[in-house]
Length: 223
Image 1 (cartoon, rainbow, N blue to C red):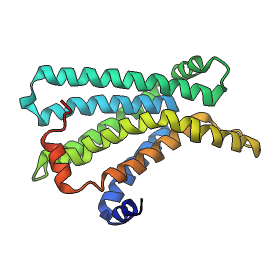
Image 2 (spheres, one colour):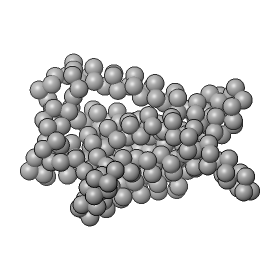
Image 3 (cartoon, rainbow, N blue to C red):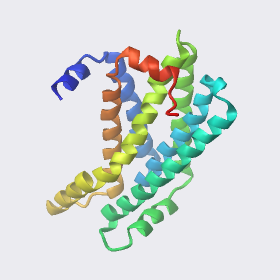
Image 4 (cartoon, rainbow, N blue to C red):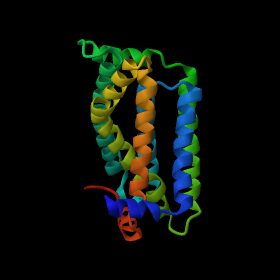
């Protein structure tokens, strides 16, 4: 832990600012776009799929068939994680009364045009910035790995960890706030927790040494 703290302190200010800016943009979309927690998770899932497709541009020799297989694997993994995220949200919002899944699914009905527009805005802005950074860099694959592949891995890990963080962090916070007289929104609380977790994990991944990032950029696929 001490070594990790030392590595975090050595991160370039530019890196920290870039990571913070990306997450502030996400928070802005949540606040001004009225994005519900479940919608935030769907946004991140769509973001992962879109950037998975865009990654194929940097690895054309892998072949269309294998890229399609990679995408289908991602869809299956995200569907699995999203199911539990919806259920755990329902438990925080409604309590363990047997209707957690229904409460989570009901949240999807409130998704309006504004939420969809903010989701598209966030993904398009990040895509354009990431492609520009990669195409103008001396080593496009390494730049793409640093700005996209690493963050996508962080996003998936954060989504998975939120299944547990909802129980062990979200629920106690909700109980404590209600105990002191507040009636917080489960959606706002969990969305903020998700962004904070993703921000922290992104900074941790940013401490990876250049040679490890270069190895990831050369072959980012697990098979």
